[in-house]
Amino acid sequence: MNALNNAGTDLNGEEGTGTNSSGVTGTGTTPLYIFNQPTQVSGSALAMSVVMTDPNEIAAAALGSGTGDNSNVLSVATFATQATVNGLTPSNYYSQFVSQLGSTISRVQTESTSQSASVTQLQSQIDSLSGVNLNDEASSMQRYERAYQAASEVFTILNQVMASALNLGVQTAVA
Image (cartoon, rainbow, N blue to C red; front, side, top):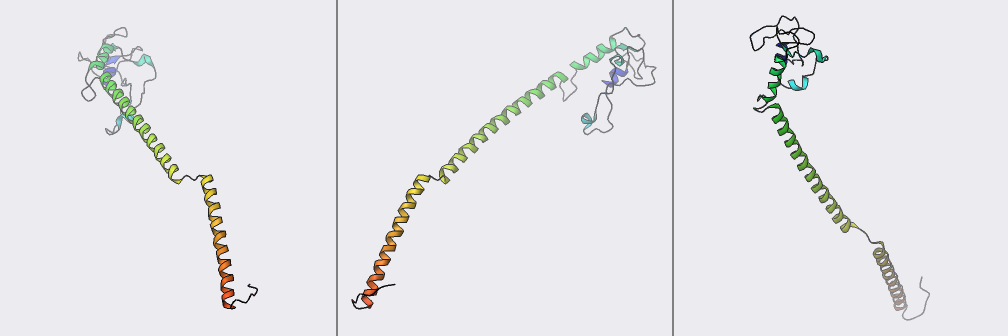
């Protein structure tokens, strides 16, 4: 894009420093760039930014053709139909990217829903295993209390029987 824009004349009449398709080289002193050009290759798209702030600086005219010509912008427009990104046109690449992104989002949402259902099911199973019914526990506690009282009575009677046996049938106070 920078090379194409730099090979033309903007609305202000400034020519770029590049050479157009007819072999004409611009007489400008400053390149007409739309984007900054990162020096590194790795991650260059991340470091790229738009440097053109005035739409009048778009070089629509061919070099030497004045500001009313639109032949350079027509050359720029052909950029949209050229296979530039992984063998695809920018529109096709964007379309494929959005399609893959939508598919990935759908898959992740489905997995998230499935995992949430699994967590809910496991939580229900944990609750059913560790859940305590207070009515059942109160009933069991009463049963254990009665069993304890009955065992206590048995030991009291055994204590009296043993005391009588040791005293050879003579009634005495047992402490």
